[in-house]
Length: 213
Image 1 (cartoon, rainbow, N blue to C red):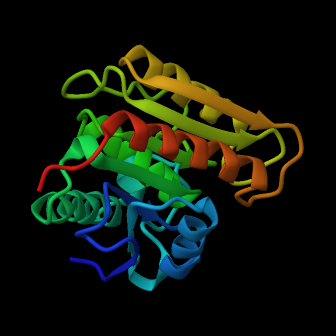
Image 2 (cartoon, rainbow, N blue to C red):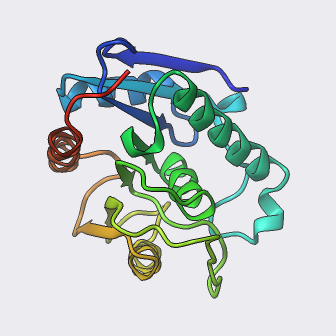
């Protein structure tokens, strides 16, 4: 189990949980600050920490075997965290999977490999993991899961073509994908992305209503 920074509403007060996965060389604290910037009451944030600051060693566009065994361990760590969050009272219907950059790639890969009726997926500048020409398969469909997927035309780390490809794959499996690709945005989470994510999470809270504990 990787270390996890927990912030936001208390477990007893929260109506929604969000797993917030940081990028390469970034920190759980950065994701906790992002959660604070969303400015939403009733959400508890779970921010895992990658070993040595990286979830896997190579670019996400490299052959999968080039990122093993670290990639497999990272996916297992997120699986374990989802299970842990469920055990404290947040079923997948009240769970948001969120990430930035490398963390977004890990988050969207989790959605594909562990499909479920999640409350939402928020993937800031990320895409499915694998080299060009990869065919992604999922154990089952992910119908109705709202997804915010973002990118930039001028991002050196996550090319816009992979963001678009990821949107098409997720949509094909039934997700409701809102894809936003900015013309010239740096490798950051912009104010507009925060606004869009905040709106999505507020909609989740309105749809879900009070939690039965």
